[in-house]
Image (tube, rainbow, N blue to C red; front, side, top):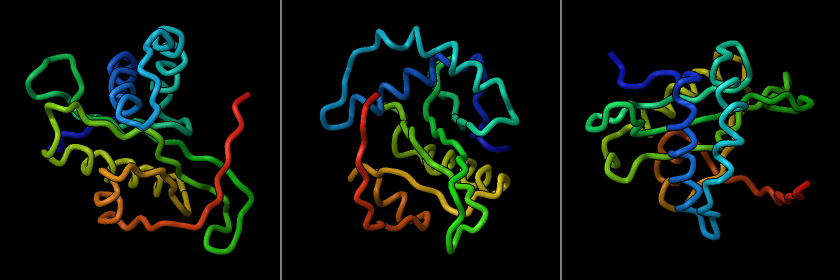
Length: 156
């Protein structure tokens, strides 16, 4: 039996906690947590929709009942098709986090394998993510490659 399971609405607080672990590890990450209470209802709603375009896969913490040890979350988006992805469905991985006391046990890799299978089931022709230097070897081992993408962002 796999340690990995799909997150449910009841996991929303723990998913937010692990997302904060990831945010805190980013250069310039905002360590404030006041936004969690506002984000929780929408996240719980998305986690409660098994047919939606969002999924999170988790591993329960082996030493702390009720806590999560690892999280991987992603979404499937539609973009106009192109060569190599004519149907236009793209997966995007945006939260990968493992509790510091549960690292080096293969949890993130196992969660990523489940998320990639979920993307395949939904017909995603490509999967994108932003990799930290620490996580890059894992993603490379799973087949991810760098692309020369001049990504920009605007906050609204």
